[in-house]
Amino acid sequence: MSKIEVITSLNNPKIKQVVKLRQRKERDSQKLFIIEGYRELSLALHSSFAIKEFFYCEELLNGKHALLFDESSKRGAQIFKVSKKVFLKIAFGERQEGVLALAKERHFKLNDISLSKNPLVVVVESLEKPGNLGAILRTCDAAGVDAVIVCDGKTDIYNPNCIRASLGAFFSVPVLEETSQNVIDWLKKNKFEIFLALTNADTLYSKVSFLAPTALVLGSENKGLSLIWQNASDLKIKIPMNGKVDSLNVAMAASILIFEALRQRETI
Image 1 (cartoon, rainbow, N blue to C red):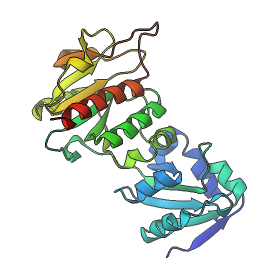
Image 2 (image 1 turned 30 degrees about the horizontal axis):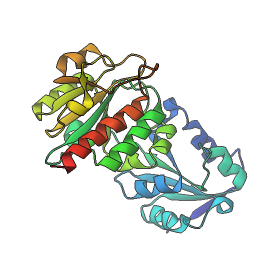
Image 3 (image 1 turned 180 degrees about the horizontal axis):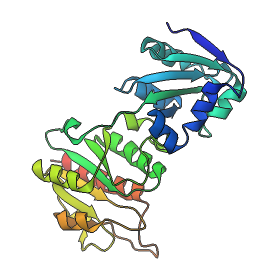
Image 4 (image 1 turned 90 degrees about the horizontal axis):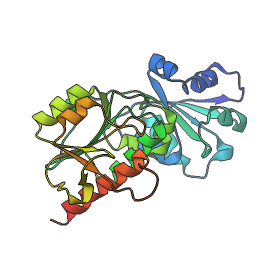
């Protein structure tokens, strides 16, 4: 079992390192990212991500930490017991559960995706808010989506807000970053139908068959999807908007389309 180091000072260099990882440039430099929360860390520990350091605060624990502690130690993580004031310093979200870890980044490639017999993938282009990406991952986990592909991303997939918003689905659904052109070539090679979600499309999503291998492509709420995707698509679909607002939050739109695909596939 790993030796436990006790930290009570806010000025400890290790604590300063964790705080710096809130910034993308530090994550890119150190190749590490933050995992906070019991559910998130539980799924991370059963994934292929390497847990490097595990921090816990006895004052904030709810009794479920023992399994996380043991599993982190078995996997060779360095263990740190920290005071409440130190944990509150390194904690990112409002839901402090007394456990936090640092993991090593992994950058998956398209060929790493293990496609099911009739795959469904979600592609997002130029998504700006990490919370939206996390919410999409959570939906994809629930629906059994094969992968989430982030194209020309403006948000870092390792942003703590993404990990937190996914409730750990980041570790159960393959998520990777790639250029739009490479993804289009890969989708066509694997005979996917490419459906674009656009507010100005003519075809209602409920009138479309999602029974073949399908890629659902969504863009940012401000700019939509680029021409490269519009030229590559097999069909442009829309969700009806009957009010004064002309579009849905991208994570909400993704949920509607994903579960329509799931509904159709489960009824055949």
